[in-house]
Length: 400
Length: 133
Image (cartoon, rainbow over all chains, first blue to last red; front, side, top):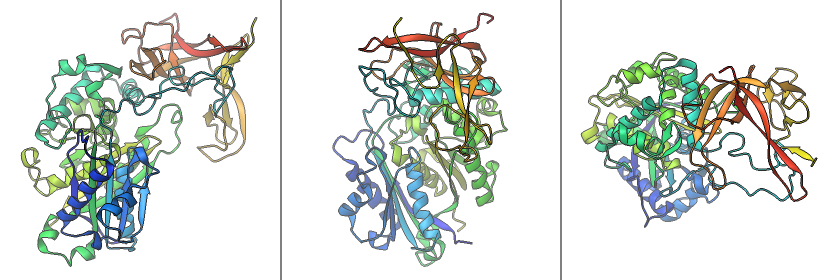
């Protein structure tokens, strides 16, 4: 059995608009602050995993090294859609678990402020002659002619499909999920939006893809997050203060979607999340009832609903009742997205899968200030990237 | 009459327009794209099968924001055609939440989407509500 891995230091930058900073600046800010938080330097780091999805070929890991320390360690530049940050973290964790090094650094960064639709934002021009092209033998681009390629539209259908299967969903229900997350972010000074929105405002805002209006979609913004991971044996050689603040990675799981009927028609974001959660609970030896807080991938209001179910926070088919009970509000039985989530904290893609870990660690360390979930001991962070990849991490407060 | 071509190669035109799928001969998984092998069982043999023309809307959205040049709003949907899920637009109704329902019965329809410089007409497909609704 490989030894336990701990989060030693972690940081997220302010999410929002950073017109004067490029991705390297933001990655540097996050990386140096995570190292300082852990009380270590680049000289202590044996592996670096880094992600920047929008420039996946640019080698953000080496770009970062050139600013903060070219120590010659292996760098893994990773890209895994919206699961890029979680993949970077898991890469560093795997290296430590494998015994290749006793300390690793994971960084995720994205510049997205002002970006519009991230998929389906442009369509190739029709050609002069109809000529079949590609795997569907299409004579012209299909977005808009055969369904939609936009993310708000894809995830709208994901939520509607849940409604079709189990009932109880409505435009208003989905909007109320968003109302919760926009209320939560008012306590998060690092969130892109920290403004409470009324249900009327949310439902009356610009419709993007029914039932998702603009505030029900993840906020495109700039940001970075970074984490230092350390082996259990190395941690024992560090100071008591470092040991006290370290957060245990009780489970680290990455899954892809197993084939299901329809999964190549509409992405099946459910099965791989369910599989990841099941594996994570087993690894950690905890159940959903043990979680003090959950940060899940609410890229759209319609997505948050299905993940209550996929993460087994409720009975199968019970996501609407779970929400209606008030459970996922910060003062409810099972707080979900107390950071504000992707809808209000923001979603700088490759940063998200480390930023949600930062949020959970913050609470487990008792350092979350005004939005502290009192007595938090165990938390779960979930991301999903279409294609698909799902990362689930379960984190536990240090026993000391 | 001008020549016609289907929008996609899995749309069969003629007197009896319908969709066809590539079905894995080993496990029965169905696909609409050109295949290298089966995503479900890794089998490499496929046969062409007809997909039912009638189905039920299992999921939909009304897209109001899309790339320039795509007319909005439109209804994008997943239609369950007798066990085979199909991606397509719901057409022939006003694209408002009042006019589209989950579980609504629909039927395949085809329509011209324009002619190229040689006068060849491309024909697309969508799903219209069945009268019995």
